[in-house]
Amino acid sequence: MPAVIEAEDLTRSFPSGVALDGLSLSVDRGEVLALLGPNGAGKTTTVRLLNGILRADRGRATVLGLDPAVDGDGVRRRTGVLTEHAGLDERLTARENLELTARMRGIDRTVAARRTTDLLERFGMADRADLPVQGTSTGQRKRLALARALLHDPDVLFLDEPTSGLDPAATRDVVELIGALASEHGRTVVLCTHFLGEAGRLADRMAVLHRGVLHAFGRPEDIAADLWDGLDARLDVGGQLGEDAARAVLGLPGVAGVAPLPEGAMVRVADREVLPVVVRTLVEAGVPVYGADARPPSLEDVYFAVEARIAATEGREVTPRAADLLGHRDGGW
Amino acid sequence: MVTPEPLADRRARWAVMRAIVAKDLIAVRRAKAVVIPMLAVPILLMVLLPFGVGLAARSQQNPDVGRILGSMPGDLAEPILSLPDHEQLIVLVNGYLLAPLFLIVPLMVSAVLAADAFAGEKERKTLESLLHLPIPERDLFLAKLASAFIPAIAVSWIGFAAFCLVANGVAWPVMHRVFVPTQLWMVMIFWVGPAVATLGLAVMVRVSARTKTAQEANQLGGAVILPLIFLSVGQSSGLLLVTLPIALGIGAAVWVIALLLVRGGLKRFTRDQLAARV
Image (cartoon, rainbow over all chains, first blue to last red; front, top):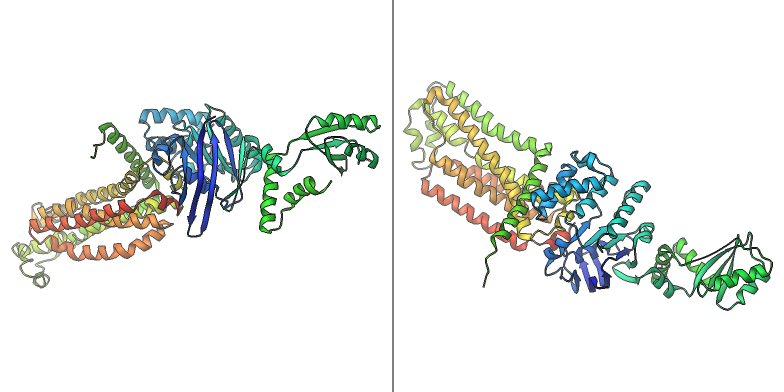
C-alpha cells in the first residue's frame, strides 16, 4: 500500500524548547494512525508540520506526495483538520460556520450551501442549523467541527483530541462517527489523542510520542512482541490453581510462566495453539476449566508499557497502571 | 519570466477573500460590544455635536470670531473672513473646527477592528482552524485588512453624509445655501480619510498578529495610534485651509506611508509565525 504521509527526521523547536525531535514515520492509504502521548508530547506540532502551518527546523515530510513546506495550500486543499478546540465562531450560526468555511476553501457558493445542508443532516445538526453556535454543547460543537473538516471530502483527516471535554455518550457518538469516516473511500486518518479507549477502537497503528521523541511506532501487536515474548492467557478454574497443577502446566512445551490469580492463573504461552494443550492437561489432572482466554495485549496495555519503559529510562517513577503491566508480564511469574 | 495568473484563479482567490471578509463582517455585526461604540462615537461626533454647535452658533447675535481667526497663521483665515459676519461662526465651527473628527472616526474604527483581526481569532480559539485552510498568506492578510477597512470607511462616509445633512440643515436659516461639503472636504473624506484608516490598520494588524488578545493589541497598538490621532486632529483643520493640490499631495504622502507599511506587513506575515503563537 502506498504511503500517504511520510515524515523523516521532522524537528521543530520553539523558544520554550524542542517540540518535536527527529520524527520519522509513514502512514498508508486508508489507515488510522493513533498519535499517542501526554500533553506536550508533540502531537499537535506534528499535525501542524504535516499540514504545513508550521515549518520544520530540520527534516522533511510529504503528504499525498506534496511537501507541506513548499506547497502547503496544495496539501491543505486535500486534508481536513479537527483542531483540539472546535474553532467555530460562536457569533455565527452552525450553517454560517460551515458554509463560509466551504467558501473560504474556494467551493462555489451553491455547492457550499448544498454540502452544508447535507453534512448538517448527516451529523444530526439540522435542527440547530440556524441557531448561533454559542448555545450548543461541546459534543455538538465537535460534531459541527467534524462536519466542517469534511466539507471538501478530504483524502486525509487530522483529528486532534476529538473527544476532549466530551461526556461518555458524546464520546461514543464521536468515536462512531470517526470510525465511519475512516472507513469511507480509503480515507487516511491521523488521530491525536490521550484517550486510549478511542485509539484502541479506531487505530490500525500507533505512534507513542513523549517530549517530542517517538518511542514506539507500529501495530500494537508488533510493539507488544518487542515488549514481551508470547501471549498472556487467563485461566478460570474457579479458584487459585494448585501448586501441582501449576508445575504440570509450566512443564509443557510453549509455556513460559504461570502466575496465580484469585480465579485461577495467568499463563504465558508462546502462541494460541499452546492453550488447548494447557486446558487438556488441567482437565486430565482433574482441574475443572471454566474459561481460557488468550488475548493479545490491548493498545492500552502496550501504551502503558511503553510509557513505563520511557519512565524507567528517564529514572522517573512508573505509574501504578504501568508498573502493574510490566510486573504482571515481566516479573510476576 | 512572470506568468500572469489565469483569470479564473484570480476570480477564485477574490471569492475566497470575499468569504473571509463576509465572515468577519457578520461576526462584527453581531458583536454588540463592538457595534455600539462603533456607531455611538460617530453619531456623537458627526451628528449630535455639529447639530448642537450649529444651533448654538446660529443663536449668537453678531458673534466676534475675529480673535480666533486672527490667531490663524498667514492668510489661512481669509476664506472665512471674506464671508458675511453672521456666517463666519457657523462656517468656522461646522465647516472647519469639526474637521478633525472626520479623521478620528475611520482611524478609530479601523484600529479597533484590526486589533481583533488575528488577536481576536486567537482569543476565540478560531485562528488555528483558519490557518489550516488553503488560503495563501497574502490573501489572508489582505482579507483581514479589508475586514477592518470596509466598516471603517462605511461608517466614516455614512457619518459624513449625515453630517452634511445636519450641518446644512441647522445652518440653513443663517446661510440659505449648502456650505458643506466643499472640494477640500471631499478630498479629506474620500482621499485622506481612507489613507489614514489604512495607516492605522496596517499598524494594528501587525500588532494583532503578534499579541494574544485583542485587548493587548489595542494597548500596544494604541501607543502608535494615539500619536496618529493627535497628529490628525492637529493637522486636519489646516487641511481645509490649504489649496486643493496641497491637500491632494498630503493625502498622497499618507497613502505612500500606509501602503509601505502594508507591504512590509505582507512580507513579514507568515502562517508559521502565527501558528507558533496559537
